[in-house]
Picture (cartoon, rainbow, N blue to C red):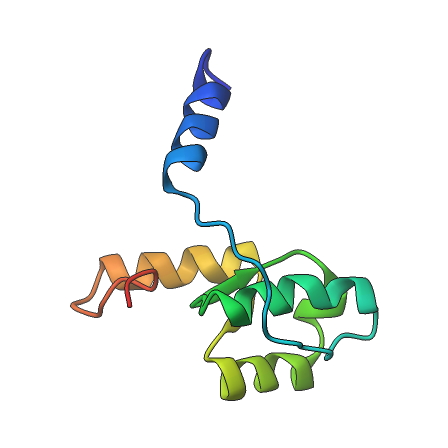
Length: 98
C-alpha cells in the first residue's frame, strides 16, 4: 500500500459514507449474527451486499429473498467487480446508481 493510501481511504469513507440504522427486520440467515448486514442493506436500499461470508453467499434462498423483497443482490467481491466491469463496457447504468 502506498504511503497515505489508508488515510485517503478513511477520509473518503468519512465524507461519503451514509450511516444506516436498521429499521427493517430481516431474519433469513442460518447464523443470527449475520442478519445485521441484511437488515442494513434492506433499510439502506442497497443495490449490492458484498460479502465473503459463506452463510450469506452460499444460501440461494437468502439471496433470492433479498433480491425479490428488497432488490438487494448478495454477491462475492469477484461477482461485484464483474458487475462493475460489465457496466463500464456497456451502456447500462452503473450498479451503484439508482
